[in-house]
Amino acid sequence: MLGSDRREILFFIVYRSHFYRFVFCTSVIRYQTVKLISMAEKRKLLNEIDKCFKKVEEGVELFEETMAKMQEANSDNQREKFQDDLKKEIKKLQRLRDQIKGWQNSSDIKDKDKLTSYRKLIEQRMEQFKDIERENKTKPHSKQGLSAEEKLDPREKEKAETVEWLQCQIRYLEDEADKTESQIESLSTADQTRKKGKRDDPKKDEKE
Image 1 (cartoon, one colour):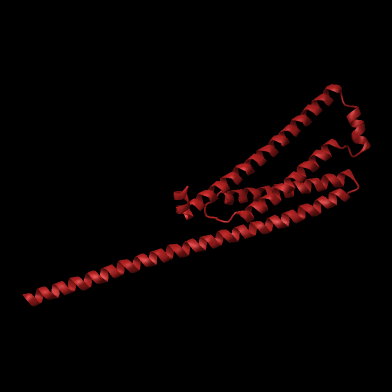
Image 2: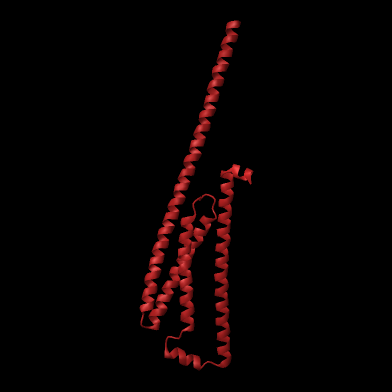
């Protein structure tokens, strides 16, 4: 009987040892799998960001080239064509800007300085395009434009001036909204950095 009991006890000890080893190995494998998936997702995200940056650089370069051509154009038709091309490029850059804004708000990305610089690069071109639009709307390019303006009915002229004024106000409000949004995001980023600094240095909080 004693021999049988001893064998059962030994069997139980060996079984439990193998069981715990199995549980430990399973946990390690699960952890490594999750870690590998996380690293793969991070690499994929960084690749997407790099592709976006490359598109921004290409878009900005094309915008600058088109703007130079527009400034050298000799006719109104050419200028209008180049302005339409600029508008298309700005829309593409705005979509990239929205993508960058999404990454700026993501907690998965720690270093956001490069995102901010590329976003500013786009916003500078947006400001340039708004200036071009304002200039082309207020500056007549031909005698036909001047004569058409002179023939306008006073009421129609007043209506056109009101519409132009409203458009200017809308653009101004859009500019202010963009500036305010940028300020809010800058403050939010600074606040997150400050909180992270406090978490990294708890002794500093105790002294304060």
